[in-house]
Length: 457
Image (cartoon, rainbow, N blue to C red; front, side, top):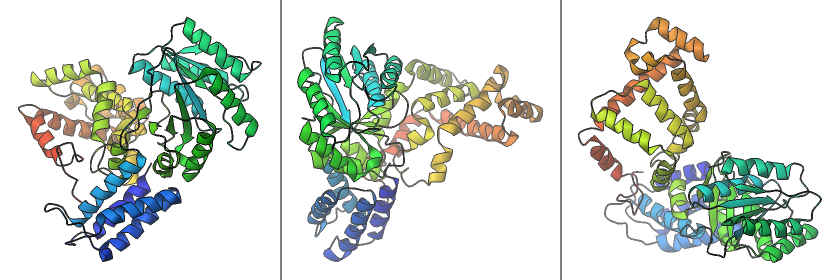
């Protein structure tokens, strides 16, 4: 998401290099480029107008800070305004209610409500240590109840059964009673997808809301619908007292218009963003971090948080201990690192959050995706234990056997051996203060407020 917008904004900033001051003349063209970039990203027109006016008001005549170029000064202004228009800071779900805290999911057909209900259950179960139940009030879509049962199992949540012969209001009422009997902390109520123009269906969800009185009413919206997302969110907001928005399918070919429009149009915060198909691919939405990613400055904070949640800390300590004792970094260690990387969305997922990686070509990003990680793991799996521990013994005949064993070419085996050699050298540098040197080198690449300035443009 935001790839095209990021490219256009970066190109605009480059044009301002070498200018001594931001003036009416040199900013006029830049703002035209920014406006076109936002419109191409399918941002709602009122939001584009407001954004451009605010950037122009702040930028014209501003003296450029001594160490910054006008391009960097402008991007600081754009960064601030992007953050502001998306909501300033993350707002988490409100669970401060007499248990069970009820969360009602609403949205259009095909927005991904059922999958998102499972992801939210997983997040609350794992990170918040809550006892979560889920129930489906969708009596119209074939297999909707079964789908929720499947995702609930994956999430480790308690599935409360329902039947298509029941009315949605009765299902919600009974589920709430069951949640109280089972002493659940949270009850997530999934509803049928509905068009905002369907008065009968909108009346039904109003009735469900009135019956269970949820503490959170979340509007689930597909990121790829662009500015239409803002329009439908407003319609739902007029019918229901929405408390927040969840953006789904942000890993797809979304232009980002929904993320930039929906907060301004509805006045409701974006609380979560879906970043993949896996059950744990739901992230808290941080406007400041998203603005940094749009501007190609990465998202180091989210990367660190993700590592803390998904990386096996015991395994990491064992590797550090092994390296400190002078033992080399072998292929089994590389395999374990690759599997950890898969948990964090593959190399592509990591690159999207690293500072300075925003302008990397789509071809390189594709090569660094989940498939490439899986290929590397498959090659190492085809090796014997001895070969993994002592890569130097892998010569011609062994390479041929390894390649045949995983259905790949000898050059693929050569490539992973070369990558292992490079990583092994890097791991040696992590001893004797190498990590401190590496962190100092990264310091200048961190976004504002994290010890560094904006990256060079």
